[in-house]
Amino acid sequence: MKHYFLVLILSVFTFGSFAQETSTSTYYLIRHAEKDRSDKSNKNPDLTKAGHERALKWSQVLNKFGIDAVYSTNYNRTMNTGKPTADANKVTIKTYHPFKIDMDTFLKETAGKSVLIVGHSNTTASFANKLIGSEIYEEIKDDNNGNLYIVTVKGSNVSHVLIKME
Image 1 (cartoon, helix red, strand yellow):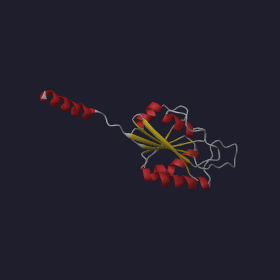
Image 2: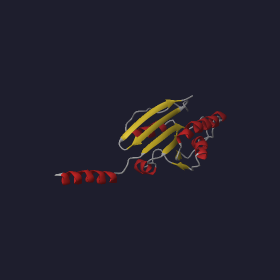
Image 3: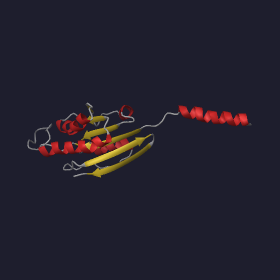
Image 4: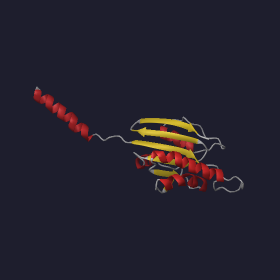
């Protein structure tokens, strides 16, 4: 009987040690900072002075979390919003298309990392919802550049919070 008990205990510890530890992935999602609206026909405007200042503020906030990757849509306003954070963390910005991204591939590539994702008023909340797996957040109003969505994924456990910053 003692022999069977010992085999059982050793089996649990041996097979248990082969179990893959679940890593934690944390996603920080923001909308681009204030864009230049002086030319209504410009589909790819840069940031305003206030926008560049906000991008620096985002960097100061996010750098405390040790960002491993920065993803941005391929527009001046989003790239320039993510640039201070990417530069401070010595990472290259990776571009993505919010409606064409393969979420399974994205989740595998970012597993165990802290990731900044810069998007738009009509894409940021929906990207957060995709990460969460539920329609929680509504589209951002066009005059709102201060939402920070934080989504944490550990295995099948997902937590999320929306922080509104000025």
